[in-house]
Image 1: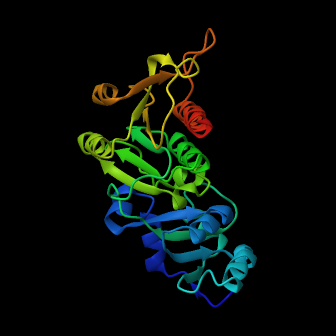
Image 2 (image 1 turned 135 degrees about the vertical axis):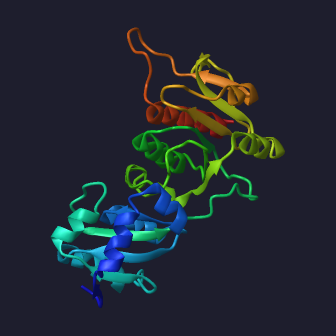
Length: 264
């Protein structure tokens, strides 16, 4: 393993505290775990400040060092027992990173592709899946309204497969502020609504960037978003199937609408 120090008790306590959303928000740091996710973090726009690894992770850390990716990163070594108490997602690769959270404000720069709008989505797996799909469809902005799961939750980070390091994130945004931001940019809002028109029968075609709103797993979208939407679309279901989860339905809609826009 490259030059490093033994993980101090002080830093161990700090890392353990990052399991809490309140601590993450107050300190502006969060954890990324696993080799693949950390590689995405090192390649993204957010700053990695620390790497903590067990001796079993020395090969990956040595490789990152030889590639010049850890020039300004502090590396600490933890034994297996201590590391298991720090891991929040149960991964077995023996390495985690501390990352500085990106600014949480709505950006002035216009989006270059689809925008993901999360309205009180609670499941970290759904949120992470949608961030991964957003990146895959060419989007670079996700807006999380107040009441949405923390996008820096370790399970969101992991389920996004590191995609959140490559998109802009605006978190804790009020509904009114989000709608005003979209109106100012003439950005059409598409709402996923079980009572809406079938996605596959709708003739709506995006003529540029658009925003897709995905709502709470139980309550759906806020009525004000439905009122502001240019289109309300639903995924048709075969008999006996009530719904798909938010991650799947939002991903299908992102792909289909993006495909239509590119075909114009």
